[in-house]
Length: 223
Image (cartoon, rainbow, N blue to C red; front, side, top):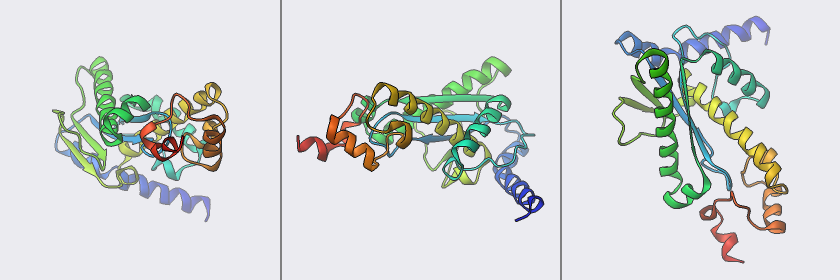
C-alpha cells in the first residue's frame, strides 16, 4: 500500500473514531473521558486503568486499540497523548486487592480511580471535572457522571483507544520494574501473563509477592 493511501485510511479511521465524542460535543458536553483497563488476564501484577480527555482538535493519526499497536508505536503515541490531553487519570489496583474482591470488581475500582484522578486534573486546569465517561464494555456503579459502555470501544472511540494506550504503557513499565525486583519469571517480556517462561519460573522459584493467588489455585493446591 502506498504511503498516501495509508495516510488516507488513517484519516478516515480517525474521523470514524471521533464520531461518538463529536456527537456528545454537539449536545453541549465538553469534557469527555475515555476509559479503558489493562491487566485483567495476567497471573501477576496489578490491573491498571486510564481515563483520558482529548481536545476536540486532536488529530494524531494511528491511535487505536493498544493491542493492535507495536510497543514502539504505543510509546510514541503515549508521549503525544500525555502532551496534548486536557486531562489524564490513572487507577492502579494491586494483586492483593484483586485476590480480595475479584478481578471484575478490581477492574471497576481501577476505572473509578482513573476517572476521579482525571476529574481532579480537569478541575485544577479548568475548574470543572469530567462531564461524560465513555468506557470499553464495562459500566461503573456509584458514579454520578453520565456514562456509556461501548463494546470494543478501544477500537471504535478515540478517547477510549487513547486510554488503552496510556494504561498499557503504564502497566508495561511497572512490570519491567517488577522484573528487576523479582527476576526469573520473564515479567519484562510477558508482563505477568502465563507464558512458558513464566510457568517455568513458578516451578523453579515458587510464586513471588506480586502473584495473584486466586489465579494460581491449581498450582498452589499441588504444593
